[in-house]
Image 1 (cartoon, helix red, strand yellow):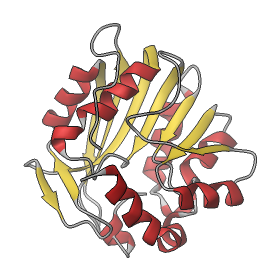
Image 2 (cartoon, rainbow, N blue to C red):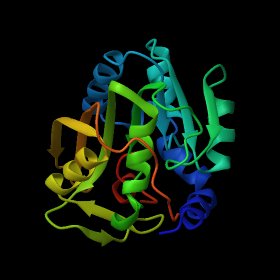
Image 3 (cartoon, rainbow, N blue to C red):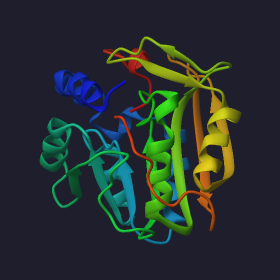
Amino acid sequence: MSVDRVRDAYAARAAEYTELFGSIEAAAEHDREHLLGWALGIDGRIIDVGCGPGQWTHFLAEHGVNIEGVDLVPEFIDTARTLHPGVSYRVGRADRLGVEDAVLGGVLSWFSLIHTDPEEIDAPLAEFARCVRPGGGLALGFFEGPELVPFDHAVTTGWFWPVDQLCLRIEQAGFQVTDAQTRDMPVSRRLGVITARRSGRGRTSAIESTEELTVAELGES
């Protein structure tokens, strides 16, 4: 799935998506507590990759987290800046974060790689590893499944990942997985959250990259 295709698909439904997910109250309380606890344990700046209309970035910033939102979709960034003035947002890509090596305390990738083809996912993971200092953190949300297969997401094709396969790819990029959780949602797909710590070895530079609507269809924002 090309980056341009994903961008255009979300741009076409940005207003609809924002109506559903523009408020942090749309997120599960369990996720708010889990990610807030993770973020408060990070020393240094966090980039919220694929921030959408900015609800997670704003929520964490309100709790004192040093965080910036980055998204591929200009319409989302415009909305985020309007809804949450005083929080930093900019247009950017997961595989080209536009920061120096090892300057970040962490990366939040909350369902922002669900449309990335398996053969292309190493590029953003390597970019995360390049940008995060040793000892820094990664939190990644995804849709979990027993097989690595595509599915018909409401916006554009998504991927189910088995936990062990995605953990392996994360570790190959230069992180050490510290926790992996999955849970069923009453009206949605099975969700997974992986947290990891940047190790002092592994890939440190980005690979050359290629590039729901109801709450139940879209899953987590």
